[in-house]
Length: 206
Image 1 (cartoon, rainbow, N blue to C red):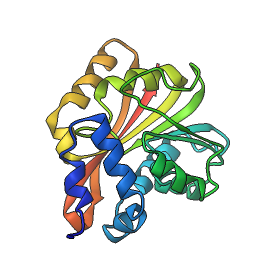
Image 2 (tube, rainbow, N blue to C red):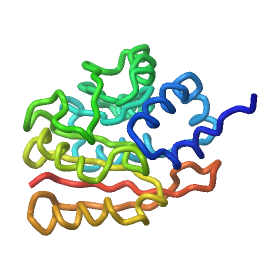
Image 3 (spheres, rainbow, N blue to C red):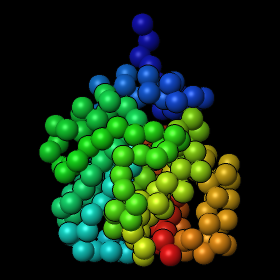
């Protein structure tokens, strides 16, 4: 049986159930696949957060934490108080082994509310989770709900989804209604081994 190309599969997902099943399968080799592909978004997003808020004690939610690569990048950047959530229990089981997260919980941001109170987090990172068949742009409303006033939201996403426009349009609407302020948008490496670029967007809740 040929080895599944999970990167290609991820771009063709059409439903929540397909996403869960694919990521549960991918969890077994996810870390190695992303290391081999030189995945840059966890490090880029952690750096972007440190520019906006370098306090190591802030309370962070790592949305779509997967196996914990994004949490590991946050820890390496000096942050100490990190929660994580993900749709895939297979991914969460792997993340537990890193002992990075204060709390890990299952969530589906496309079906809010999630198990977190309003105004609960100083910062939220969403690394590679806004994409086709993954978290939809409307989920940003839920992230804003659980983010404290003046809190920071960092979104990392690939060129394909950025250029599709639905996420950036949602951000423009929120900015126009004074719910958020877009602080910075930086283009750079996403997955260099696949010749894929991406964006890191820094946002403040108003």
